[in-house]
Image (tube, rainbow, N blue to C red; front, side, top):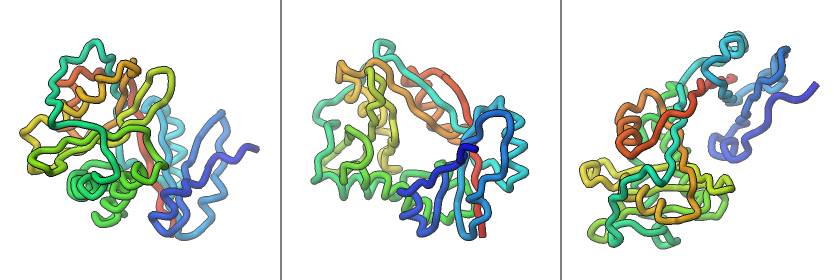
Length: 232
């Protein structure tokens, strides 16, 4: 029988305990052996129409924390709003500014929505996520927005190949929400003619984010339920 889970080594290091990514496939599901371990974290993502899998996850002790909405944008449908002096690609010297923005800009991630994670740990996960770009272990490009010498936003991108790029993380400082920096960073990224399709995932609970992507021409593609499990 195929093992239906794999350790998320990156997340394990941050949490200080084993973290597993569970996959359900086929028609017969047995309880993953990892759930017999103590002091673990496990997560699973399923399509919203997979009701039987949702029932199985509940039986295993998982609970729903998020509905992740996948959106897509074809560059030719984007109305550019770019200020070259504001947005540009990040370099090593921008790490501290990016981490400062990340420290107080995320409220709706699945880790922030999960009551079993305190705010400090949820923020730490996002901070380390951003730090991974600067260490060369996650993402291929990052656009930053700088106003009066201060980094106020960033956009992390992952190259999936064949012209498909994913917005892995995007954030704008709460103090700069009215400057439309998110739109400017997307516009800057789309200057790259190699980008044929841009996609992004966001939480259905994050209404400001959904409104932002709709205004920027993104359209609905799919949705997934996200489940968490905490073993004591």
